[in-house]
Length: 365
Image: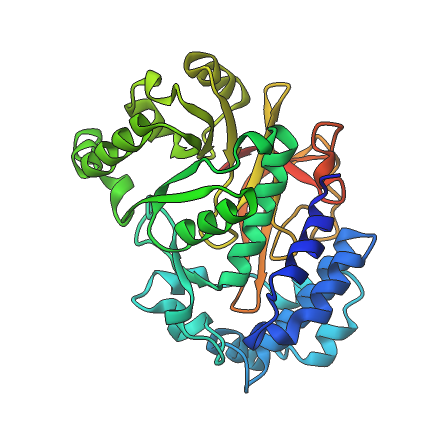
């Protein structure tokens, strides 16, 4: 049986994740996974992360300062009876601070962490300076379990064993996450990393020129063959000849502009299975399932929670509303309004994430 929560329990215990500062979070993590109600499990986990973050001896400058100004105390955190109450108490984060040089280190990094033992992740920078955060190997492993669960639910993974996982994507956290995914799938990791800073602000011609070395390496590696999984943004996929993927089992694609209809069209053109991802720089992976012209994404609970019932409002299944993304890692606590999305209940096809609500039809408005 392939179930995300059970996979987390299995692999978290097997990988000795709870070392260093993460050792403080083993019991809360286990408690979050054992809770029959996911919102209650998230409430318990967020209480521990928030209390750690506002503590003057362990926390981050941003949250310690905010707690003092807003009178957020451990008692108020632990007395919160619902996730809605706790999210309202903590309030949204000022993510603009992450656009500053070394903004994460100065404001959001707790005292017990160092960037030289973590991996960088940045936003696309489409609307201004990119936001940059750092993730621990533990958080990236949990994110990889999210991907592993979703891939296994959609493809016979025994066919991928000992093949190459070709990871074309940003330097840092993206590559480390795919190394861990390759381990879980028993594949050979092959990186094709590049710097994304300012890339999306370039004209199509300038982007083609900047990406030329990456595309040449990608072409060479695909021609070598024995590629089980190739990763690509949809823009990158459109730049490559379709017959290059002849000896590739499946392609993992990213980009919120992907539609179910567009995905099916590209699958037909290439003749390969495409698995979509909602990759958020701070919240990391949310694996996608395509069906009925929709793509439904499931986040890497409890480190990422896409919350749609806050403010005393219950979003019905099938209803579109603005999401609030909670990123609750020991090394990073962010709460912010994010994309609009439709709340989706799990189906027979997505039962591996049956405890967690999915989101689809992502848009900025």
